Image (cartoon, rainbow, N blue to C red; front, side):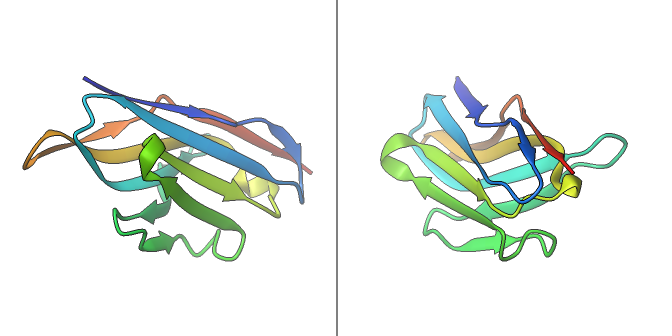
Amino acid sequence: QVQLVESGGALVQAGGSLRLSCAASGSTFSIGAMRWYRQAPGKQRELVASISSTRSTNYADSVKGRFTISRDNAKNTVYLQMNSLKPEDTAVYYCNADVSDRPLISSTYWGQGTQVTVSS
C-alpha cells in the first residue's frame, strides 16, 4: 500500500511564501512523475506543476515565475515552493504521484490535501 501525505498548508498574507511537502511511503519500488494540483471552492481541480523522474518540470501559466516544484528522490518527497502568493492561489492543494510497488506496474496515488489560504 502507498500513502502520500502533504504538509505545509497555512494562512498567509498576499505577497508571502509557503513551502508544501508531500512524502510517499509504503511499497514504493519506484516513483515516476509527481504533481501538485489545487482545487478552489466551486472550481475544478487544476494541475499546478509537475516534475518527472528526470526532474523535467512544467507549470500552469498562472504560477509560472512564482512557484517552483522540486523532488528529493532519497526521501520520496516532492515540494512546492510558492512565492508572491495571491488571494487567487487560495485552494486545497493535492499531491499526486505515479508509484510502482513492483517492476513495470504503476498506479497513480493522491494525497489527502492541504489547505492554503491567502488573505488580501
